[in-house]
Structure formats: C-alpha cells, structure tokens
Figure (cartoon, rainbow, N blue to C red):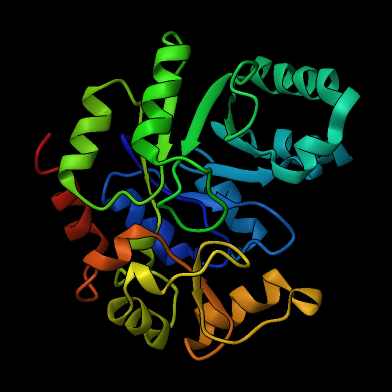
Length: 267
C-alpha cells in the first residue's frame, strides 16, 4: 500500500482512473459490491494494486469465496449498521478475517471495533459519505494513544501537503483522499459533476443522506442511495455527489498526478 490511497467511493472508478492512480504511484481503491463501476474481469488485472472496500454484509453472505478468487492484497470491511446488528456473530467475523489474513491479505476495519481490528481506518467528520462524530485530527490522536502498536490509516477532509505530512510523520500508514481525486481529469465523473465540485463550498454540503452535495430535493422515505449517487456523478444536475472539506480547495480540473505531487510536496 502506498502512502496515499484513492478513497474507494462507489460510482467514481473506472479502468482509466485506476491506471492513472497506478501511474501517479498511489494505491487505487474501489468499492466492491453489486454496483461496482469497474467490470469484474478488470479486477483480476489490477488485483496486485487495488485497495478493496466492501460492506460486511457481503462478507457474512459467503462473499469470501469471491475474495479468495481474486487474492487481493488489502481489504477494508465496512461495519456500520451491519456491524451494530451482528451481535453474537462477532466471533464469526473475527474467524473470517483470520482466514483472509492466513491467505496473505491485510484486513482493515473502517470506523468499527478498533479493539479487534487488524488494521484501523479512522475517518473524520470532515470527509465525504458516512463519517464519524469527531474531527480526523482528534480521532487519529485518540486512536494512536489508545492503540499505539496498531497500524492506523486516516481519511476525511484531507486536501493539503501539510496534512499529509502531519499524519504520515506521526505514525499513520497512509492518507486516504476522496473529494480531491473525484474532481481530477481522469475521474469518471462527468464534466458537469466536476464543475459542481469546483463551484461548491463545504458549507453547501448536507448530512442527509450522507455528507455531500444534494442536487435534488429528497424525502427520506423514498430515497435510493445507489440510484441518486449514480445520477449525481453521471449528470451533475440531480441526485447527490458525496464530498467533504476539500471542496473549498478545488479550483479547477487537474491531472491526478499533479494533485498527488502537490500532496507529497512536503514529504
């Protein structure tokens, strides 16, 4: 895993984008689920490079066989609602994780049960999508103090070389970047969606359905997250686009490699 990872937001990944990440010497991340935007046959081509994120519910539904087929290097398990509802199944989750690690794959828990997490991904409330209650700075330093011997990754509102330098020099393994990269030249967001990111400010984001920009008015009762996200990134006119604190620092559409060079400039 490189010290900068492209945060695995659903609907914003393509073969061209993954190849751009590899060329820029960062780790490309994808959300592996029913609506993954990279064709399945391409996953094999990139399996040695990818950081793969998937909901725990898929793991509990015997998705493990698919994971073993690809033999990914690093897998992030999203707990969230599923984790809170598992209850007595926690030992089963640990057992599955142990089996994955026995096959040589690193396992990361995102914002869930750091005491049993093989590797911790902490996400601050400045990020896009589902976030924690605390700032990334506070959450990282709290976790670093409580679990000094665990590997910790950081995510949420990272947009500057100063932030990247701070987290890496203070013990984080990698910094995850989402919003900045969603706006880059190689990102599969349509031009209209990228222009929305350029014009928007972080103050424009809303917490429902997740932290981001609402391009339409929604009622919670009939909201379809996957459908509206797909609409947002493919039209830029309606739906939602998840975005975080970095919105205030996006001024133009730039090549991914240029953004990465800026982020690493103080290292």
